[in-house]
Image (cartoon, rainbow, N blue to C red; front, side, top):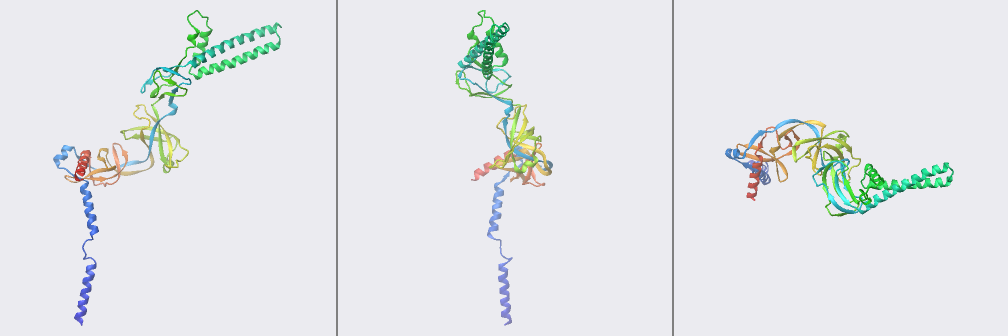
Length: 405
């Protein structure tokens, strides 16, 4: 009986052992380890020392640096409306001359477009007629004052002539204003009237004074950025013919998140950068903080005035606005800009894990630190990364991946 109980106990212990630690690894764990290994091999490039030399591969440890707690806000460049002008005609007519092309620099008051506009001739004629009528009415008033003193006319006649003079003055002012609206300045208008009143010696005909050629000049010095007119074209009022802009100053329109607003204020310094010129920085200042939050994007427009004397920045170019020292500084790992490659839309850095083994490791990048780029996630202080020749490793990795497919 005793031996029977001992046998049952041993059998129970064996069953328990089978249910616990003596069991082999689970199939799921084996599959996970296998998948990790496959993924690592797929992201691995092997290159001998000779091949590394040929590809210009160089390695160095990722280094730490203290960076200011800057806030980076995306945006786009735009023309400054205060430094932009559109050239158009207020009259119908036919273009007979265009004196500027896109890309030209023009000076203030430079002739840009000449339009044959019959209405302009009519406006000049109306002005000269109004001037002649005003001069006649003025003389009639002066004569009335003399005759009134001599009691040759009564007070009623004098008042009538004064009223005619006031009406003539109003008509003259309207005719003069019309010429101003067509682009003639005060000096040109006065010269036109002076030539009409000058005794005619036969050298100047009235038709010459009222010629229908409307000249459109540059209201400011600037750069021709748009042109939508050709010689011989019939144009209508308000049609935009040319656009001038002073490109030495642009607007940077940033889209600030609501969380960024406590760090943004008028007059604050902003560093403007673009991926097109990674080593260049432009400086500007916040000129205006928007008053409304966009319902869809939940952002606020920030206007920054940016100097652009070298004209490398272009309107509609995407840029980044950086507010330095907006938050506390932090210690980060950095690598050279060349070390960061993009594969499948993801930033990676090649890490050396053996004399001839390089693994493409996904990383999260941060701001630029001089000529280097901060790496927020994906590396540790002991990693040795490829700082030169990373593009060749990327090409080899992509080639081997395509071959494997």
